[in-house]
Image (tube, rainbow, N blue to C red):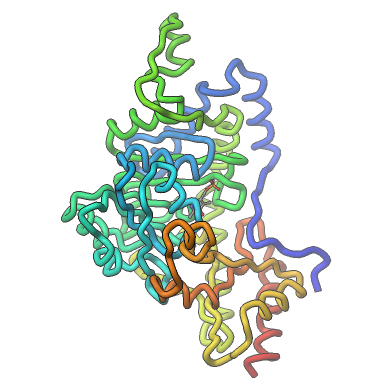
Length: 385
Ligand SMILES: *Cc1c(COP(=O)(O)O)cnc(C)c1O
């Protein structure tokens, strides 16, 4: 029995990170300063994109990407039925309509065949969600998007540092979104970024995060002018320099952190393969997985113990399991708004009843990993013989 519950995810902030934040706090620029651009360049370089626009959250980044894609009232955007609510919400922010596509039963990644079936003359974009850190089938999604003239947006909030067929996440879609929430690979407290190879998209997004104003404060200071024009409607989605200083410091540790996540995931894979209680998600040999989450699906057909029961039993062992996610179309808001009923995405709905995320973060000790494995094996003996 553990003295404290092991969380499913946790940030890591060390003295070097703290020193970087203090240095930014002592500088002339708290926001819209040089650290923002430096962080944008560092992330763009890391993921192989030409441009990056940093904003105040992953959700703001999704909204900004929807704006760049030109989503507006009457437009439909195909969104996976297995994601965080922020993905469809960003479509709604712009007055568009999210249309949910079902997922593959073994990976819970969006099923390109169902995406194709959900495309109508009103469809304007497709969102791919690299669920758990496993990149989607981008070859097929790209072909679909090109055939129908759609913008391909990657919600890669789980997949910073992942790759598909040797190509980095960040180069696979027209717009790719990352989050720097504390549970994600690296953190800025709150924060997000959109990367793109299209310079018009990048320019539009820089205005959107700053009220729709054509120049920012830093540029006007350099030009020695007060004059500015607001040319479109935007928001204040700016991120601060001290957050970006934290992000830059965290980013240096990303390769080692992803390696640690992979080591832990591989230990889980070995410990849990061929077990009756649950099955880990399938991993394609064509990807480099970023392992944001370690998701398993309970084998409710063979071991008829409810997810709630297993969830509570593991929590009682001090293992902070979680559920990612209830399909967005099942939330009351979307049921009211879209009249979406159970049955529209049967694979995602069926998976939801079986889902469990086990603790996975780079700061876990070997003992933490052993505790998770021991708690699971204990339940196996109890329920699955
Ligand atoms: C975390 C997350 C978001 C939202 O990011 P925030 O930074 O929390 O706003 C969006 N989509 C997915 C899939 C996420 O995991």
